[in-house]
Image 1 (cartoon, rainbow, N blue to C red):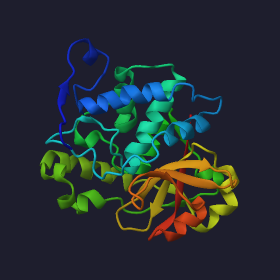
Image 2: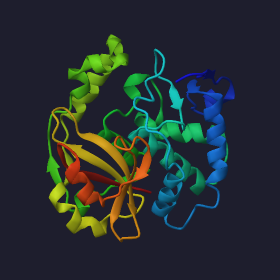
Image 3: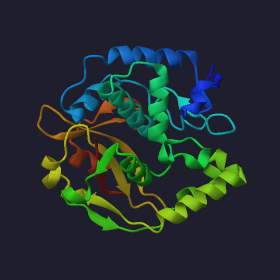
Length: 280
């Protein structure tokens, strides 16, 4: 992550709820502005199809893990040059929403990105980031940005301990700070009191017709302490099947899966099914 600079936003921006600090290189700011230009004309009457069109403009972008773990405190990281699976989805959703709201500036982009990435839309330290994807879905549903449709398409309820970060503190540099650690443990305590729905792997193909292009797909896992291990965007391809548009840890770049989603998941160790959220 060379040549990153810290931009401090002051003055009137703060009054409108903008994050006081963002981390963005000059190249990434330029990339955002170029992407805003690139996606003009991609909007359709179907928001899901718009998201797929926006997502495909990222094809070939390198997969880079832990792109948000920058510096010694939480900032709004803007990075289009390397994406992990979650930041890919967040950025695609942010640019798609810009199209629907006819917004065209870098300032518009960072505000939407903050809204998507943080609890209740506000950056307030490391603990405010939506680290667990089941919470990411539920919190963004509360914001009116999407609807969790997993139960409606045949999902079943599961309740399990969600505590991977708290029990693997050494894997997360920000958790060396006791304040950050306690906030994550508090979040996990809330999540442990909830259940969530997932569509079992062996039920995906039969219910595939209920999934639309643009739906957000999260891969549910049997790994102890985790809800989700990967995420991407559904794309109905020329074969008529749903494939996964995602930042892949296999090819190490943004791609559309060669196999349809139902078949692709059979090769994912410890996958038990999917969560499906429909952007609104």
